Structures are given as C-alpha cells and as structure tokens.
Length: 266
Image (cartoon, rainbow, N blue to C red; front, top):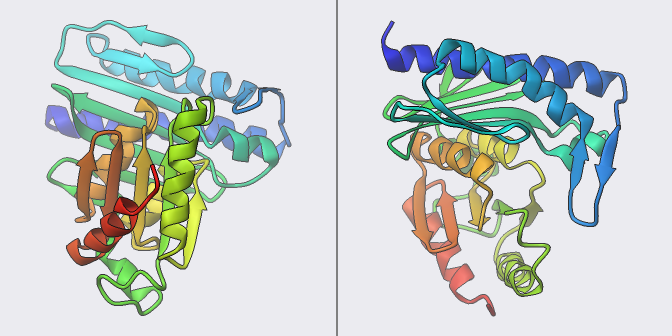
C-alpha cells in the first residue's frame, strides 16, 4: 500500500467513525446545542470529532491537523488534515438528514484526498487527486447531471444550483448583501437555487450528477478543500475569481452560470 493509499484509507475510516457517532445521536433525537443568531454549535460536533481525531493522529502522528473543535496540531510533514466532524449542524439540530462528517487532506497546500460520510443515509464519497470520485465504491461523474432532467449543456432553465457561503458572510451586512445579489442573479436564470447548510452533502450530489452547479462565496476552510476536490475529480468545469468559486457540469453551463453571476448587483 502506498502512502497515498494509506492516507485515503485513514480518511475514509475517520469519516465512518465520526458518522457512527452522529448516526446514533441523530436517531436518539439529540438536539443539545448552543444556538446563536447565525450558527449552531452542537454537542454532536465535539463527540464526533473525539471519534475521528484519534484515527488520524494514531495513523499519522507527524502530520499537521486542523480539527474544527480541538484546533491546530503542528506537524513536520507536507501533509495537513482538515477535520469537520459535523457539516450541516443546523440541519442536524433541526432533525433534517442532510449532514455529514468530512475530512480533507492537503499536500503542500493542495487538496489530495477528500472523504465524506452521510450517516443518516449511509452514503460515502472518496475523492483523490488524479483518481476521480467514488460514491459507495463506484466511480461517478458530474456530467451525468445532464441526464437527470433532460437538459442540454449550457441550458440553465432546468438547472439546480447550490449556493455555499462561509460562516462570516451572514455576520457582515456588506458580505450578506453580496451573497443575496448572487442568489438573486441565479434565481433569474435557473430553475432552483439551494441555499446550502451542508456544503459537503451538496457537493457530493453535484459530483454524482444530481445538481448542475455549485457556487461558493467565501467558503469556510473546513468545506472548501472537500468541495473543490469533489468537483475537480468529478470532471466538472471550475472557475475561481477571488472570493467566488463556480463549478458546473461542463464548460457551456459554467459559462452561462458565470454570465448570470456577472450580472449580480454586488
């Protein structure tokens, strides 16, 4: 087994461990959390991370790690792990099944491996640079989205697009206004705009052809590497412009999405 094979295996094991904790708490109706105006901090976050962090640290004690709850762990290797024990905390607390445990591994700052497990539906995604995306073991492709609703490349009329914003956006009136303008511009062109509370879940749907686009505005580090690797390795067309990142099933659809966003009153 190569080093990257082992990293991929450990990433998958970590999200399965965190997901097992989340699944039990979700089924028990666990809603213990601190509720703020713009965010929720659930007890399940801490509990899931306590299951995930040892899996990574025991396998790779010399790797740097950022865990959402425990913080930074220094390392001497070129690898850095990013652990998000509960992506979609608002959904989890509300009793919705759209939440996941996720892990990203960077090598020299670039995404190498991403793993996502959705415990409520028992779905797992694993992406690796140059190796594609696998959904429950099978290779998937974002271009399959064109067959979902019969829409052709570049046709936004039947498209579903997820919008992902970072946690700092709702707290800043100027950034919130920019995000609203982006949503409004998309709403004029596409069938449906999803305001994502669980970026890795919707990025997985995009990677296997269930959504036609992903728009990220100032995304959080915990999700950004996962969503970008899933999109790239699923063969999507991707464009980045400062704080804005857009992914679509193909270049024609990407061009139409970017054209719509260029018209946003930001």
